[in-house]
Image (cartoon, rainbow, N blue to C red; front, top):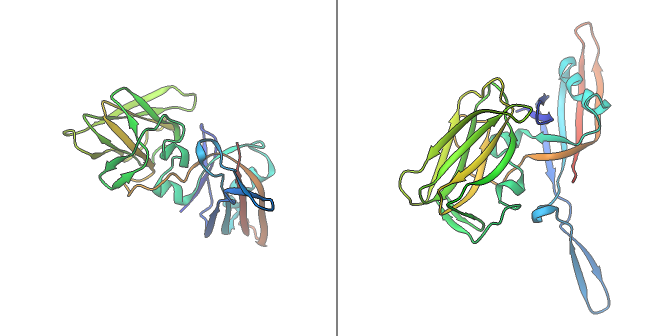
Length: 256
C-alpha cells in the first residue's frame, strides 16, 4: 500500500513501502541520585509520544522516485508535512491524540460495543472530535464513533481552502451503546479534508477515519499532522531510456 505525504490541500502518494517501522522514543528521561530517582515525561501535548518512521520504498521507477525526491530536495519546502502511512489509512488516519480525545475535556470512560474506553466526551451538545483530517478525492472514506444516547455523527467535507463542500450525518437507532458509521465509496473531487462531529450523545469515544469502503476494527490513530523529512535516499540501480530503477527510503520525525 502507498503512503501519502503533503499538505492539507494536497496529499501526494509516495511509492508503496516494501517495509516500514514506526518507533516511539523512550517516554521518560530518568535522573538518579544516591537515594532517589526522578522520571521526566517527554510526551507531547495531551500525553502522546512523538514518533519516528523509517520507510523502505524498495524498487522505484523514475516517476515514483521523482515524487519522493521532490520532497527530499525541498521542492515542497522544508515542512512540516502531513503524513499518512500505508498502515494509517487502512486502520485510522486520525492522529493518536485525536483518536483518544487527548485535547478535549474527556471525562470518565465508557462501555463501547468493542470494550471499555478509558476516555469519553459528554453530550448532548455538539463536540468536534477532529478537524481537517485528510481525504483523497475519488477514493473511499469511512468515519465511525462509539456513542450512547440519541447521538448523531456529522461528517463535514471541506475543500483545500476550508470551505464546506458537503455535510453528511448518521443517526443512532435507540440509545444503547452503538457504533455510528458513515461511509462514502468516492470522495468528491473538490473535497480535501473532513471534520468529525458528534451531538445528542450521552457519551462518545473512539473516533476513527479510514480510507476504506467499510468500517475497520477501532485502533488508536496512526496519522501525523507535523513531520519533517530527516533524510531520504534515491540511489540509481539501472538507468535506461525509460528512466531506469532506483532504490528509495525516507526517514521522518514528528515535530511540534
